Image (cartoon, one colour):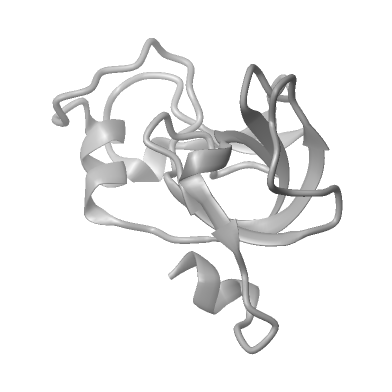
Length: 120
């Protein structure tokens, strides 16, 4: 999949758009095809290496997203493939075509909202 990847801590302008391995949904997680993302201050701090969490590089930042459920991991319930959802995933990964998130981190996206509104 394509993703904005942080190869090394530094300015957000240094993120690289490239191929990155697809996430695999684990226990209680869903895989979401990302249609829209939110851009926020903590994600910038994470990329700069100034946040309290410091993932190992390379990594895909991004915590806010909206899209459609693509697959369910083991033990995931409450959602079905194709459901429109929005969420916030502390582990990052939303600056990509797909993100895996716990079912507790996502919510149904009402039909009255766009994916852009859901990710905001």
